Image (cartoon, rainbow, N blue to C red; front, side):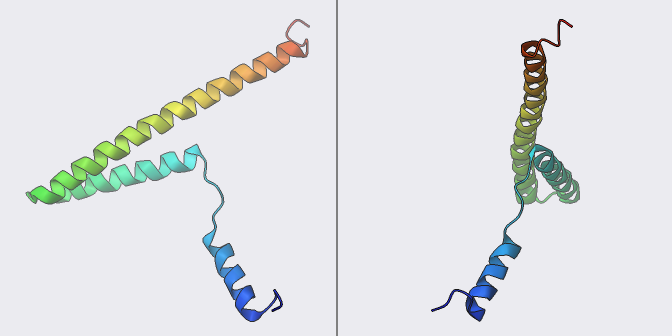
Length: 97
């Protein structure tokens, strides 16, 4: 069976539509912040529905913990990049010029 059949082309096109580019920390941080905001809005609108309140509190605590880790990793990544640039500059002898 040839690889360029209509079925194969359709399947390949569908797969290309499904695949996304790899995200980065800023994308993840933004998504988590939006999730936190939405969970907070649901919590505020929950009135006295205990189940919804508990689910929102759980979602907020989980997302907040993950958000804090993402921010921490992002800060460490920036500091590490700065240190690597400084080390590279010193190796090239430009630091003492």
